[in-house]
Amino acid sequence: MSETWLVVGLGNPGAQYAGNRHNVGQMVLDELAQRMGARFSVHKSRAQLAEGRLGIGGPKLLLAKPMSYMNLSGGATSALSRFFGIEPDHVIAVHDEIDIPFNTVKLKLGGGEGGHNGLRDISKALATKDYLRVRVGVGRPPGRMDTADYVLKDFTATERKDLPFLLDSAADAVEELVGSGLVAAQQRFHSPS
Image (cartoon, rainbow, N blue to C red; front, side, top):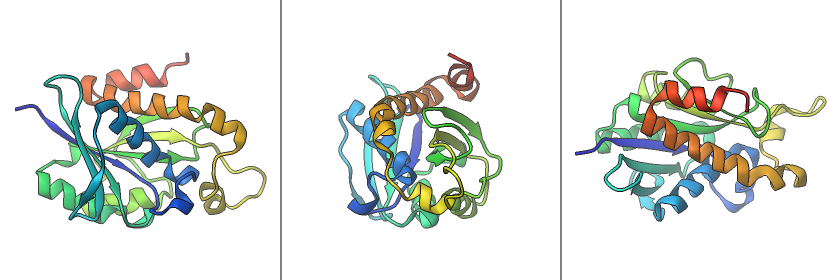
């Protein structure tokens, strides 16, 4: 039996949030689902769930988009990990990251949440910070704009031109993480191109 991974795309539910920077994690999951030919359906854990495999006979991916607001992402994450028997080291949170530039993807295991309430709630619900993160760079707010206001705004027209490449790169990062491990994925995505 091949291993199973839970990939959680963070964001807020509802059409009014769909294009927000804060929802980039869910956008990445849409890209992964499309690649696997998987469709999302509502799961009893209060998440939209899609299942598929990486390649023929490859690892199984459970793609989850919590239907709660971002700061309550932990409930669905822990419910799914218990339901499917997935340990935290096979949980990947895909989320927006203001501390890295737009169009950049970074990966890490554990560590702090950097003020990200979605990650904080997942850490609390899983009772550990030792899960994987795919950090999708959205850049810092301009001027004195409040961080919360910034992440709850849609990407700019200029950013939207490059957004498909960023989503593609982040989806590649998830696949590399699952297929080759953290170190190999970091070497690929952290080295200057």
